Length: 203
Image 1: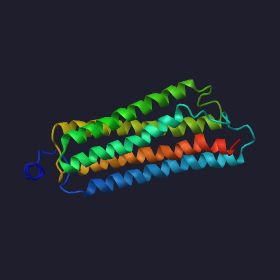
Image 2: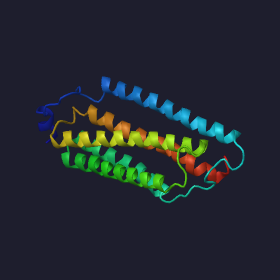
Image 3: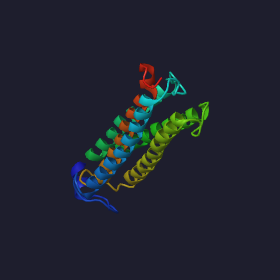
Image 4: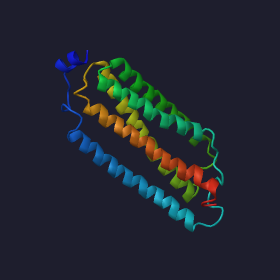
């Protein structure tokens, strides 16, 4: 089956044959620049918190519900997306669709819960410097989640149209790499805004 797919891959609009190519360098550069942006935002939080007066935090102990299970859900979506990528690698379209579709649904649930959490907050972005940093950082991450969902949806559509093969999959690998980045960034955001206050930082 795999040999037949390799011999007759479906037409691809873009993308070279093989695992590496210019697309990999492009997504690597994008991730590096976005990681720097998040690093600046988190540095701003730690710097401001370290120099702020007691009571700077609007939530001395941020609620772990639903933030913690939502975090676990997003991190788990990386494994599901990886499962889908392996499906493309093996020429198993059903596995690829299940993985990409599952990651999309999990990411969509994460985004929905995050927006509900924003709505339930007793403060708004202009309430204080803490609120401004919180909404800016989580809002920027949400923008990346939405971009990742669009990428997953496009990848799923292209897999359904049989645009990929075990040799032609660099576009999928780049898209999944971006989704891993989105998940890893949230791990740092969650640790900063939810866990460190419980350890006494910024209070």
